[in-house]
Length: 183
Image 1 (spheres, rainbow, N blue to C red):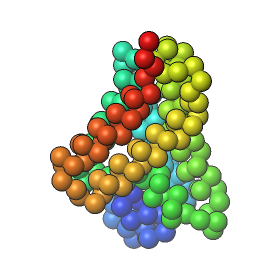
Image 2: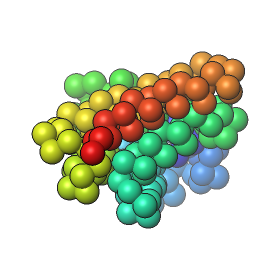
Image 3: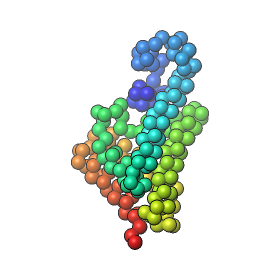
Image 4: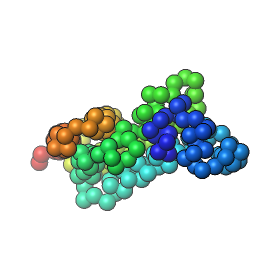
């Protein structure tokens, strides 16, 4: 996963995979059938972790809006040294994979849609709990927040001052909690 995350699908060679997996080409193909299938498995692993983390945050928080705020705030602490890249592997893959790999592109889009649905679910729960106005559009808010999430991940890639990163995350989180309905 780290190799594909850093180099991308196209730039990752069979030699790169042999070295990273410590496997011969025949063993790689026996285990994964193709480079494309191995990449698909890494996308599923990466996205599955992100989706599970977000779903858990929403279900465990005292309020859905608090969970969504917390998710944004957690991105304020991204550090390029923590992971192969702070940029989202799904977004990087979406930008790289164009019409020459429609099936892979479809997988990436499906995962991005799942994340958006999780965010939308969080906003729907916040609306049902009376945390945000009844006329708030959870789908629209989810698209907005997803843009914030990916923007924070890209900003972290630039290696900004950690305090600036935390402040930016706080600003975006404050926008989300600014939706809170005042009784």
